[in-house]
Image (cartoon, rainbow, N blue to C red; front, top):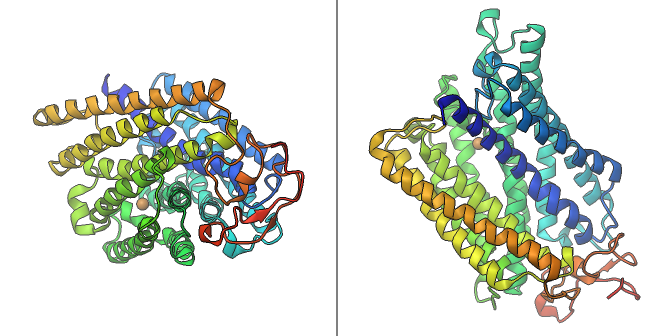
Length: 482
Ligand code: CU1
C-alpha cells in the first residue's frame, strides 16, 4: 500500500469509526428499545426518524465512492486545514458527506429528547427510567447541541474552498487553529455520544444479570449528566501541542481530569451492583463485564493524554491509538455486542447459541487486549500514528499486532454466523427468556408493531428484584400475542 492509499484507507477507517460509533448504539439499539423501555408505541416523530435514518445511506455511499476517485483523501478524518483545503474533489465530497451525517445526528438527538420527555407511560417517572434511557437521553442532548459545531466548521471549510473565503487560510487573514477549536468543540462531546449510552447499557445489563437493584441509581444518573455538562468544556485537550495560547493548557487539563470523577462513579456503581449478587454469566453479562475491564484500562491511560506535560511526549503516537481503541472498541463496541446478545431474543423471537456467544467473547476479549496493549508500548517508543511508516526496530511488535488484529476480526465471523444462523433457525424464545422486570420483556417476542397491546401502567423501579413482583409495569390484559 503506497502512502497515498494509506492516507485514504486511514481516513476511511477514522470516519467509518466515527459514523458507526456515533450512530450505532443510540441510533440502532436506542431507537428500538427506548420507546419499549418507557412504554411508548414508537419514537415521537416517526417521519423525522425515517429522515434521520435515510440520510445515512447516501453518506456511506458518497464516502466509499469518493475514496476511490483519483487523489483520494489526504487529511485524515479530522479534516484539518490546510491539508483538507488543498485536497481535490474527493475531499470536498468527504466534507459534504460529513455535514449530512451531522444533520442526521442532530435530528436524531431532537427526536430522542422529545420521545423521553413526552411519551413516557403513566407511572414512568424520571426516577423510574431504566438507566439505558438516561444514557440515550444524555447522549441526545450532546448530539443536538454539539453536532452544530462540527457542521459549522465543515461549512466554513466548504465556503473557503468553493467561494474563496478565508476562515482558515492564513494568506487571507484566517487561522487554521480556529478550525481545530470549533471542530473539537463537537468532536470531544462526540466520544460521549458514543460512550454514555454504552456506560448506561453496561449498567443496565449488570443490574439485570446480577438480579440486584442498580447500586446508587441516582448517583449513576447524576454521573452521566455531569459527564454531559462537563464534556463541552474540555475540547482543547486535543490541542496541547498545536501551538494554541499557553494559558489555555491548565484549565483544559483540569476540566478534562475532572471527568474521571463521574466516570469513576459509573464504574463503582457497576462493581457495587455485582458485589454479592447472584451473577448469571451469559454472553451479554460477559461483554458487560468486559466493558468494565477494558474501559478501566482505556480510562486510566487517558489521564496521561489529558496531562499537558505527558501529552507533549504522547501526542500523535500509538499510545493515543491504543488508549482510544480501549475506550471505543473495548468500551462502546463491547457494550453494543452485550446489547445485541441481550436483546437478540426480543428482536428476533429466537435464542442465539450461548456456546458460540461465549467463544466470540473470549476470542474478542483476549485478542483485543493483546492488540491494543502493545500499541501503547510502541507509542511510548515514539511510533507515530496516521503515518504509513514506522521505525524498523518496531517491525516485530507491529507484526504481532497485525496477527492479533486478524484474530480479532476472525472472532466477528463467529458472531455474524451465530446471529444469522440463530435468527434463521435458533430455538424459539419466550417473551421474557431472562425473567426480567423492564417493560420490553412484558410484550411478545419479536415485538409487535405498536410495541404493547395496551398502554402499560408503571408501578415500581426497574431493578427491584427483591420485591417479589415480576415486572415494574403492568400491561393490561390480553398482553400481545404470547
Ligand atoms: Cu477529547
